[in-house]
Image 1 (cartoon, helix red, strand yellow):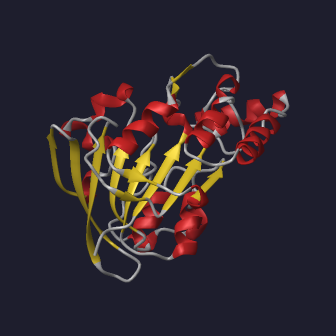
Image 2 (cartoon, helix red, strand yellow):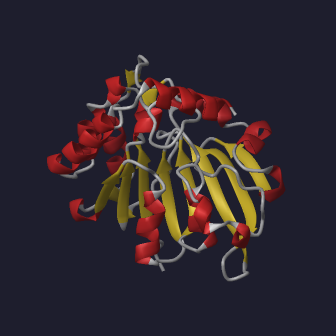
Amino acid sequence: MEKRIYLDIDMDYFVEPIEKESVDNIRLFHDKECEILSVNTVVEKLREQGLNWKNSKISCFTNHKTSYTHWWISKKQDNLLIHIDAHSDLYRNSNKDLRLLHNGDIACYNYIWYGIRDGYIGEVYWVIPDSLKDLLDVQKAENIINKELIAVKFVDEKGMHLQIQCINITGEIKQIPIHICTIDQLPGLEGVCDHVTIATSPEFVPAAADDLVFELIEGFGATKDAAQNIYNQHKNMLKRSPEELQAAWKKLEK
């Protein structure tokens, strides 16, 4: 059976410099300067690789953990995930037994583990910005996945390839391939994407990048109204007091 494809995109892929961490609902980096990469270039390269998607199958939101919600609603199993993001979103899990993940702990930085746990995700392509090419080194694999979970790791002309071993929600031992590559290294994955999820992650991008919301959301085929709604949420999140920002910085430092 042909594998279904989920296309999952984060706006922070297109913004440099890349911020490693933030605090939910607080835009700590709102006043930073930044450079913005082209959305259309990525869209064109995905199309060249044979990927297509329907505008009616696109969901847009600010918090990336919402991608899991859409996978949960669908309940479709063993999908191939193309994750275009400056972050792996496979952080903070060292357990082979994914049944130990608590539902209350799902967040924007770990939701892919929950997708793997519940069988929704059977293989991952993490597409990284060119500025993160130095990650494509087997010696740095443990910066991406806890070494206790990695069964196989190697690098070739198509990027770095890991195979992780874990136990899913049914107690089955699963081998999950995870590929890390740039957009130019992504292999031909022809097919119609079953769902496209787009997160804008305002906590990780400066206010100077907010207009990118329109290029990103409309570039992938969603409506201007959807983009305007997300843009308004970005701007509303700027309404924080100095005290709230200071408390968030202290939380991040801890």
